[in-house]
Image 1: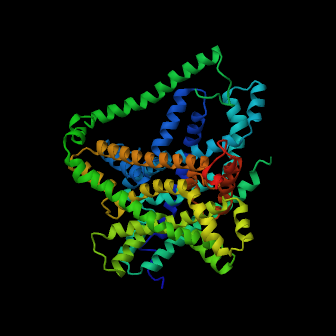
Image 2: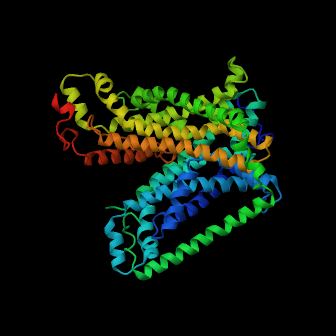
Image 3: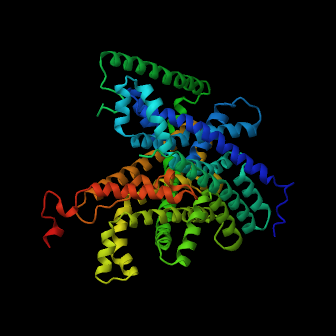
Length: 223
Length: 330
């Protein structure tokens, strides 16, 4: 039944490995950029707050597909940004990561901002009473607690990101969905092929969810 | 500044100077990449008026490409929502059943379709229609896109329905049982009608996610929605950057309208005199809440209790200051 699984012809594990790599690099980038955005949104400088708000509201209302396709069409094909590489696969991969980071960071930022709101007001007041300035209050007192509170929503963002990496197929990154498209066009066994890829994504998302669910219980701030 | 944050004091003289300096530094940090981008654009002649003019001067760009594309996008989104809603309601109610042989399958279906990427569902549907149906080749992408969206969003809406029913005060069920209603009657006559109101904001917000996901069909299946229309514009008028910018603006405007409508609805329902004031917050539907197989339950738990907590703070609808509500008078 699974004789279509000719691993010499179809690099199934390679495709899923690309999916994992896309997810990991994008997640790291989105976490960093999202934290910076969240810091801007709560900062005392109005211009930064305005920028953070505008960025989040605009970018997350643009379809991810449009962002990824535009990265390829506009940045690479029109403006000739090669992302420091000559290999088309590498360029497409890096452009995709860029798009995922830009998009996913908005959700990370919103989750973190909600997390900052869960920190009791007294914590920040006490920190300020000790003479800490804004940066210190944020970095030493508020953000560490906020991060511990937002593990579940961040886990959801990560799982959504894992599924969203399929969009990279639209600019030809050789990840799982592109291989699936290729396989169902050539092989006449739609159901088994779909089952294999569905199983692959469940294997990727389910343990992530369970593990981070366990982590969120471990690190939760007991109040 | 609207209200002082707890993170920092109201600025004194030194803080004001520092904030002004930070503002200047930030504007410069923002302007440098922007200026660089503009110069690159200018080098590639992307800022020439000829590339942007057609959007104003050539009406064909709208009548032939963008507006029909937008229409396809909105049609697919609306159809997907309308078909997914009843399915989601059935699944959501199924998950709350007392019988394990209804609850378990509903759980499995919901978790399965939530952990599969929508794009894969669309690809699958496209091929399935090609092999096992006689849907015409031209309309197949539309069918495939809607099928993919329905499968995924039915699962997400099931969770919204569940959150909606759980957000209702416990007393509603108790009262229904007290007057002798059976479980199904309680659900159909008491809980669901109120839950629908409570869910409306979340459902409208889910439309934003659906509208964004239609673009997947345009990129990989050849569905003639706004993104594929934009591709045609970009190649016909050779104005890639301008075309994608305009498309992005259209998407943002449509989704802003939907989000704005959802939060207006939420506020209105919260303040409403009729009903329990229970409401599923509209950002419940956002993508951040909709992912996730394994952790669905705890996250939903927080979402639902959040809703309950929020509604618990609302004044009892019967006891609103203006007293004589139409319901109270009867």
